Length: 333
Ligand code: DGY
Figure (spheres, rainbow, N blue to C red):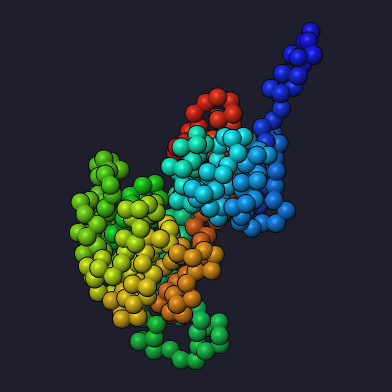
């Protein structure tokens, strides 16, 4: 039998940790979350404000957030001590000031692996869409303006057998390389570390990004957005690329100096771009939208049912590990 005090403690131990989920996640994720957590959901599916997040930090033990929730140092420093862990429903963590969160002892996790295939699929769609002038072609037929045909009509750039440069040969970069091999593309890459031979699968490693850019008829970005990678594609680096190259970005908008890319798309130095990410999200860049040679998508790289479920479950696995006293598999701080 328990004494009243023991009963109280037992009650405390049995209480589920409180979890705030910032956005409308998949039904499977919500159902599973309720098994181990007392779940708090938003009424409207929109990014949470700084003040809301600070207020919530005193009411819950954990956050499950998306890249739309910006945890800057001024948000982090006002967090209540109750908040113990932030599980991201994203592989990218650039929306979180990791140093600030680490300094106040908040554990941060992400969801690698599970979205690599979906993101690589979108990267290939962007590459093909940009190379084969999908926007222009689609507009002509949809707007009822397809009234002639000639051998010089809508001539694009062939992809099969061409050179593809990949910056960031992590999980998504490798999945993109696998897709591109299906089109017989020659894979070249730059990465912080050269991959072991068996992972390279014949891809050519370039020690510097400059060296890679010089031979990249097609370039696909797959690195995280950090201080080092911010605007790696800029006026200077674009000039290194072969004329008429194609640039693809399904990683983060901050990797590209958008004005430099716009100038290169107008001058023809870059013949097309396929973009799923922008400096300003949501919304994108109207100057890019105005260009016919840009194939654009609204940050939907990982947006498949299978991947959304997998991201949600992976974030929950990290939370479950933390609350059962183990180190989460995807702990980043
Ligand atoms: C990611 O996981 O980082 C994707 O961009 C979706 O948030």
